[in-house]
Image (cartoon, rainbow, N blue to C red):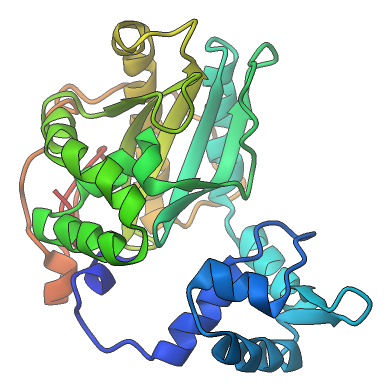
Length: 310
């Protein structure tokens, strides 16, 4: 979800929005759903879903399975997704950074991107001895229940973050009840420390820590996150041992994203990035620049302004 959409800027063509809501129901290439199941997941009338699935099938975005009387993702959607992934040449560089951290920390280290009230793992690395952590590329995690989601919403400009929460209250009220009491504390933690923690909110067995980054290429925030077993890593240990590695990692990936506005060539040499001296402080500069139609060039850093950026 782009911040400008959440804040109510511009007109939304509902039929297009609903078509994407239908496609989001198919988590994973093998997912098979009928119109009733899609209707329940989307909260749309079954008649509306029937028209949308018919159109999406004609377009090749879905395929109908007569024996099951269900739909699955079509080849056109897979091809479009594959083409997009092939074009993200920076993923290899990001993955190598995640893998470096995974060598020392027994958890799942992820790079996630926002999708409405969820975040999706674009890349991940996992320590060989990581237990109870099964997230992988393409996994969707709830924004309200994870450190990554808390960090993302906290990084938005206050007005935009509040608009996201208001929309969540309408569509996912239970998630909104989890996020709302934490929002101000998360904003303060992000300003003071540069990261957000969430312990036991996604699973009682998992503690998480996350830092948001601005993506010039996609004009929104992405998030670097680390999940660990709560029996091994208390919140205090996260702060003392994991936070410095997270901030170092976020600065390294921030440098990758800022380089040539995110257009990374395959032959770029891997460099050793040093953490910024001031990266624990998030300045409230340049409010809502994207919504005003302009954005000043900025150096690579963790959380910075524009389009609801803090």
